[in-house]
Structures are given as structure tokens and as C-alpha cells.
Figure 1 (cartoon, rainbow, N blue to C red):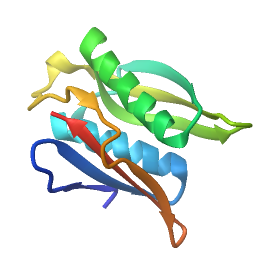
Figure 2 (cartoon, helix red, strand yellow; figure 1 turned 30 degrees about the horizontal axis):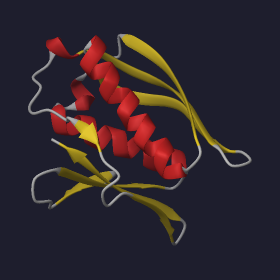
Figure 3 (cartoon, rainbow, N blue to C red; figure 1 turned 120 degrees about the vertical axis):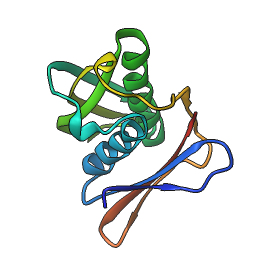
Figure 4 (tube, rainbow, N blue to C red; figure 1 turned 180 degrees about the horizontal axis):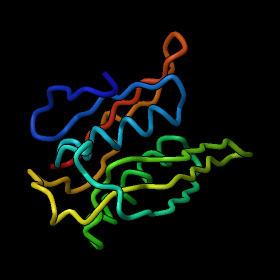
Amino acid sequence: MRYEYLDHTADLKIRAYGGTLEEAFINTVIGAFDFLTDTSKVERTIKKKISITANRINSLLYDFLEELLFLLDTEGFILAEIKDMRIIEGEGTFSLSCTALGDKYKRYEVKGNIKSVTYSEMSIKKYQGEYVIEVVLDI
């Protein structure tokens, strides 16, 4: 399993896994969008190039999720897949670049809403060669 939903009082808590940091980031956002609709059924008709730079890895994840939610709210873009993900650690910065593939959300049954990303209970760790990310989203 690429991700799982964890019990949380009022919000959506996701634990995602990956053999690489990039894979764990991808599984986190797929877990978020799978909460809204079955991403495996979303057509890949729209491409969005995403580039983000942050000073901390947690901020990079936050900004990545926030960018995808912004595209959902402003352009009606619903995510299906992330391609060509690269995360590079520089001197005091982290950079992410990828291509998000998806479609207009109005073509799909969308259940619920993700209001925002939070730093509450966010963690990015590596255990026995595998990355594990936990994040809470306000729903």
C-alpha cells in the first residue's frame, strides 16, 4: 500500500510510504486526492509544471500540497498522477520540480473538500531505508 488514512478527530491524516523521498511525496498527494475522488479514474488531459523551493523539507511538502490545492480551487484541476518528480537539496534550500497530470474536477464525482494543509503532526522520516510521511489536512 502506498498510503493509508489514520484516525484523526476531525481532519484527514495520511501516512505515505516511499523507497525515495520523491515517491513518498507523490504517494502523499495521491492519498490526499484519492480522498476526494478515485484518482485512477481521472483522465490525464491537463499538464501542470510545478516548481517549488523552500528552506525546510517540511515546508517543501506543505507548499507542494498547497500548490495542488490552489490549482483545484482556482482552476478546477484534479490530480491523477505526478510524473518526473525531482527533489534536490541545496545549500539551505530544497527544490522540487514535477509535472502534475489531471483533468477538470467537474467531470468526476468529488466527495468532500480539503480546506488546507497544516503543519500539525507533520513528519518526514526515514526508517530502514524507506521514507514515511505523515501529514494532517483540514477538511
